[in-house]
Amino acid sequence: MTGAGRNGHHMPEAAREAAPRRPLRIVRESGPGDDPGPLGRPSVVPHGSRRHRLRQRPPLHRACRLVILVAGLVCIAGGLALSVLPGPLTIPPVLLGLWLWSTEFAWAQRLFQSAAVKGREAWRHARKHPVSSTTITAGGLLMVVAGVWTLQRLDVVSTVRAAVGA
Figure 1 (cartoon, rainbow, N blue to C red):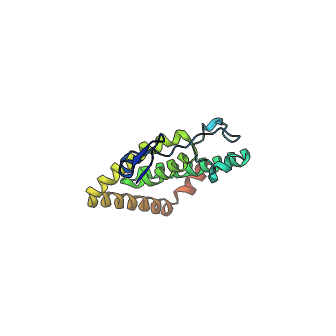
Figure 2 (tube, rainbow, N blue to C red; figure 1 turned 90 degrees about the vertical axis):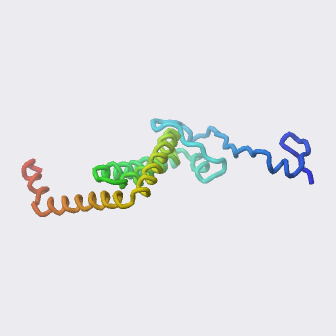
């Protein structure tokens, strides 16, 4: 059985199946919600998708971008706060924040791709050395719990507030 090829010529079915397929192209269309603004260009989305329809309403699109920016920032800040702990605890929240940003901001897609590669490498390392990774992570969590308990026990927060005058 034969069918029309890419340029209208007939080709056998086996040859058609073996022929490399072109990936689906998403054409970037300029619309009213595509103003780059201070956060850069929006990421490319398929025409007709929910995100594309949202971009047709600029005030709602700007509000959505702001929510995504803040949610990603909270995740990344949480991951950076966890960076004081030993082990791979900091990676998931940072990746989540970058993924959130990459859904809306074109510049964040590049950051997310490089961070995902580093995250996979860290995960491979943790799987190769499960005992040491678990021990280091558990030890770090115990140190944080001990530190919080000590701060509460010695009433450090109220002492510092009284010293500062707040």
